[in-house]
Image (cartoon, rainbow, N blue to C red; front, side, top):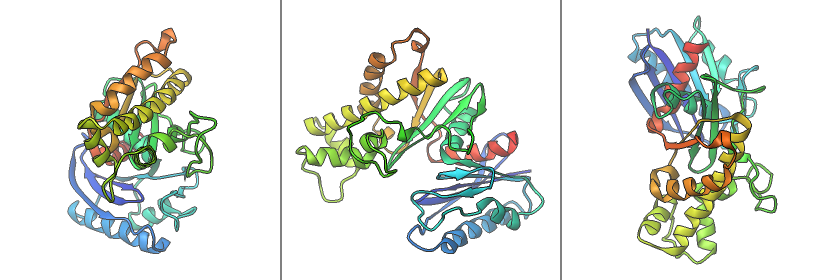
Length: 302
């Protein structure tokens, strides 16, 4: 029987059906009405559940939910930073009411991304894995000793808010000097514009990468700066968790060598402990479906 999986974020909501091997036999996505009320967002989720149930013939074996956080996995609630109307929203109970009689598992989107890559993507075979998304934000999740590690509340691995510059700029979380405030796509673009890059109107990380690939010195410096911040964070988390692999996906990671070459170079400077010598960094393989695959895996492990 298929597993229904959901991936709820501030930009899009995705739904899928996964077979027991993790292959997605049905997927759909819609824009998240993040600026609207809580029930407007829920209506989109409910409609996507109904469509997926129809595609499954009316029955599924369980539901896995990946959600932007913070989450509270004990209460089954979510408070995504980028969905302002969902504060303590009881998403697990709401889904259970629509799909009764089957297990419903909730995980953070970072944990689900890491779990999906560990199961079917670039993380296969790794025992101690950090999965990361570097995009409009920097998120992450941990798979330790082969199992997802949600932590006390479900938010372990939220590495975008590791502090890498104690005198740095204020982050959206309220802290200062977080890696997200340096290495996210918008942060790199903002720094480049402040330092002389003549950005096209509405430019984002894709345009910054194009300029860097063409040899623009400020754009290249922005990528080096972001990559160095990521390397400092990875070295720290690697030392704490004794990692053997970091898998990085998201829009900024699509820049390929522009990000990975300076990141690996900086990591070799930061990660000097003997037990970190084998720590590898690799691009993600599952793209935008990693969260759905990981959400399905949550049900299998639950």
